[in-house]
Amino acid sequence: MIQASEFARFKHTPMVMATGYDYPFARILEEAGVDVILVGDSLANVVLGLSSTREVGMDTMSIFVAAAARGATRTHILADMPYGSDSDPAKAVANGRRFLQLGAHSVKLEGAKLEAIKALTSEGIPVVGHLGLLPQTAKSFKQVGREPPERDEVLRSADALVKAGAIGMVLEHMAFDLAAQVTRAVPVPTIGIGAGRDVDGQVLVLHDFLGLHPGPIPPFAKAFAGLHGAALAGAEEYCRAVRERRFPEK
Image (cartoon, rainbow, N blue to C red; front, side):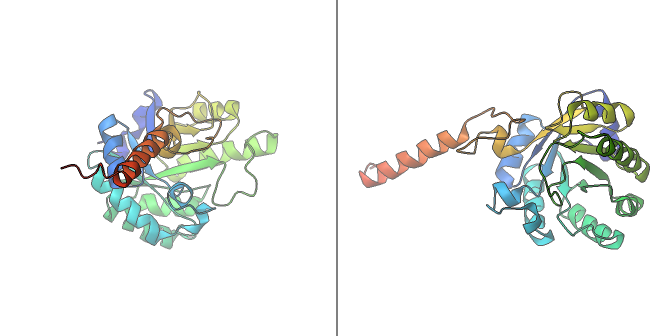
């Protein structure tokens, strides 16, 4: 298992991160050799069918963090802090401790919440930052970093995250050259999602890269399997077998 203290080595070796939300898929990801499983609040959309990540809280996230930790006992589990759970340092520490007690090894916070990050790290709770597009608070889903003021803010925030104690940072839907600049500027690994190739690692949503969606996936993602079609075919064959009395067999 990759310990938080070992994150620094991924400045030179690409980190493979993937979202995983439950016991069976966490087991698959571990067997495949994924470095870090992110129990993301994206489960609001891809698992629960909700319209926003803001619609899940600590109680819901705790169920999925515990399930993933039971499924992947030898893999680093990174738990997303849901909307509002890190609104002040004391709350962030209490919720971070809760995730670690459930089997997570680190937590991820969106944005430059420096006081919360300092409080968490001072209590021995490893933190991964998240810059660029911030789904919990975004008013627009356009690419981040096209204008100079926005670029300067990202660079300042990246430096501040490191000084606050972050062991790594996710860069989401960010101008590729800006993501590369951040990667060169910080000593901790950067993990991109829609941030180009010049980062230290990549993270994708499980349902995107396994082809679990019936429709299109984000342009920065790639389906490495087609599980929706396979699952649909299996379910259809089950329906036929029951209706034609071919199942159960004698």
